[in-house]
Image (tube, rainbow over all chains, first blue to last red; front, side):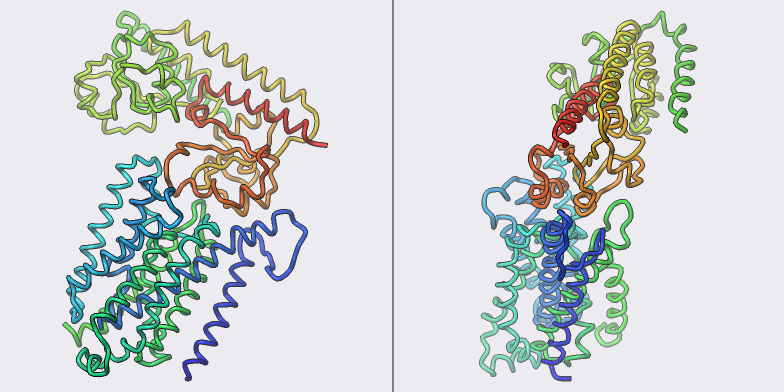
Length: 323
Length: 287
């Protein structure tokens, strides 16, 4: 199938599920109609729209980052959550939020997330290297995740927040509940800028898939492009996590599901993974609202339920060839 | 089921009465408390020189209305190693206190009473009287209980004199938590002549209300429970959501100080009186 056709189909699907998500909630509201209820506009545009927009943006960022990291590290298990980038971003955001720095400037919270993400991407790159084995990448990610999870708990405990327990869960599993347009506005510029940077690296990733030397002979400066990808991932994932918590497995599952459609050229995979991630998170967020009981489930629960078994499946499938 | 708490309280009282004669001779002189609600009643009823320690919540003004009276009374974190050196002759705990501590203290020979701290107005009177008996402050407890009964009866009478349909109140706290039936808040709302949205939606005890559900129900007043609102937290994000600011005018929003809702007791009468005043205002505003 032609890539543009797939992109068009995914765009149409995204539009459809987004409209559905706007209509779906406590009561069914058709977003294309106007009604007389006093609360209608508030519910549609102040409560549901920010949720849907965040699901689209964060899903796109995570799908894209997963595809880009898989290309850059040439490792099928790379994903911002698995390698620890998301957790570090959450730590950065937690430090900024609970120290009260978030009130200092509108961009303080996403900045905290981006700094955290930036540190971890570099850390993973140094620890695992560009020719990482499955083993070393996952172990590095496990260590980073465990360590950073502990640090998040520590910061929340020191901040003596009476809701510490539930907020730790929020940062580790993510949620779009009760987000406002303001959250979208503070994070969107960085998510978009980071994603654009990653998308420009498509040709480099294509070349890289033929080997580092080939990429260099084709005229790419590996040093420079590596930093563009790493910086783009850090900025976009950092900003995304700072307003939604750490939503796992999206970056792992989406590129794997879509790779059969577009073949093995990373450049084409980047675009479709962004769209696929957005669709997945919009759907997952609707599912969360539909099945939650007294207290709303965290989004990461849904994505982990889908992604966990998938992760194991990929490990099993690649084990014979790599280990 | 409604009478169960009362029945339990009566059983509990009779068990106390049995022990009381034995305890009479040794009225507790060094009392420690592990629970905010027993802290507050201790401060109300017992001279401070007889208190050896209170839970650290007692000194937190966001939940304790007597925080400024704690002064130099030591604070504990429910750890046996803090309590034992204080050599209390009576330790008061609540039904939700850590049972391991209770067990450990008892093993060291300290007398620990685990009280069923009431969660609704139902058991308030019996609890205060039983508590007074336990700590050797019977007459003060009787006076306090009588005074609270009187104040709550006045609120109830005041509400029944108001005409018109009861306004619908939505109570909203951190994480979107809203108290439903069988909660102190529900008792107080009913007493003051207000309807409780959470109760009408079938929530028993505590549940969450989504922002959407809150707006769609079109309550007449939004009562915000701003527990520790000065802290930076995700939990309060629902309460700060622009949708609420946009939909409810400032005089549709009522802020009930969280310290009034922390325990069933003297503050419950204050809260009931504030809610009755709110009910009167809402009545005036209606056509």
